[in-house]
Image 1: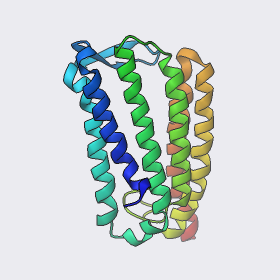
Image 2: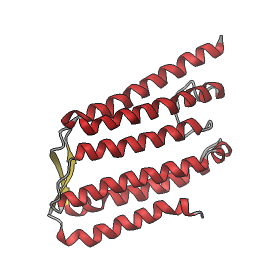
Image 3: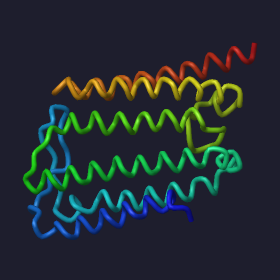
Image 4: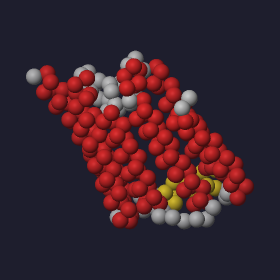
Length: 211
């Protein structure tokens, strides 16, 4: 197994190790959620507050390993497996950053969560754009609408455009760094808009192909 595919396992082990190390120092109730203004408004019991993210990473790692092997079009996945592995690693880094933020916040270190989230989310969405524009037709990864799954030409057109607009959405997310309590709008609205746009684009592209 390549180092690239072992990296998520390293992140998982490190997450559990950090949680175990800081467990005695953590409060009985762990802050686990913040509202759009960056104010803590959700709590969990100590154990789950500390170890929920590592367990989620274990589940996601297993899921990412299983899906490519059961895809009827798994041969296509091999054509962009490198990009898929890169995306997984960036996603795990993003989740690990969220985990470290949660741990440090509960240890008494306070940061601007919306600024952190805007930067982290921008990198994540940009990597998604890179993955999307390289994805070949399959059943699990990419922009899966009834029309992209019905036509390889529509799939390729939609993913070529999708890669570009996701990258634009990532750049817009960076403006959240300057937007304070309104950062959530720069993060979520472009992403929602891109998702709707790509569904509509795939539909009309499919109709044009029929003509």
